[in-house]
Length: 251
Length: 124
Image (cartoon, rainbow over all chains, first blue to last red; front, top):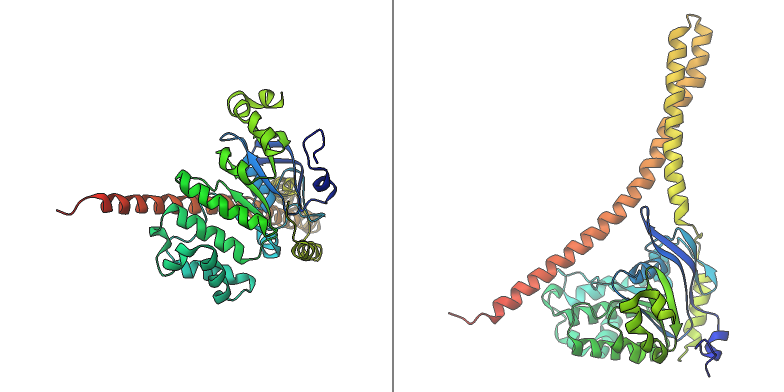
């Protein structure tokens, strides 16, 4: 059941796991987020879309704790965590897969996975879980990551994120530099992760594939959220947002 | 929409029990500005103290100027400078780290591209 503004009535009553309230953020003196409001509820896949430079990655960086906002609040599981260090949040289950993958290119797959055992999970368990989900990584466990394809590196980044048993996952530009078929495969995995109960906030510039797995979507433009709603509704507004800015998307 | 109540509940408990205080980015900027203001005030006090010592021949007056002017001024100058360095350095190091990561990725992409190009060239 959806309410007139397009939000699922049942999910609207559940307290969000991640909330951004009137977030303002700046790089030195230049403000790039001008009051962003966003909520991700348990089990939800929220797609944050928008053209290049809209402020999507900055929003994600604020949510993960990497950037401290100049205004507004970041609320996780009902608690104000504005300014709390990203490693504190990550240790408790708010995990980020950054743009550009964030893997160690000079280490092997196995060594990269070892880096993910800081949360206390044994390496054998992390490896077993990873190779079960990403078979290709199993074949390449002793290969130096920098020599692997972009898709495989992205799989490794996701595996490393999953190793810390996330409750909320923040994904930044999963499709960056990857072939469409690889992107499709990766989003299938994201769908599986979401089906296992992880709440996901995914930032994407290329919208079509991510809308296929999203339960809610939002469009960002010029540092503001200009539309939020079910994926089908947002898909209709996309071209307007990309080509005509926020006024067109609001129509 | 799927929910995993156990994990969500566990997550909520862990976040609730987290020993960390919420802060705001504006605090960082405020402390940076405070550092500049305090060190400037310290500099002025030290100068006033120094000039006062020069202008008085009476040792008691000189000591008084040294205590309230020079020493306090120098202490404020050091404290303000430390505050400024702490917060400007944190900001600088954050950008530096992001830049390092970005360069590392760019290098990796270049190496991978070179390997792929080399693999495409037929052996002579």
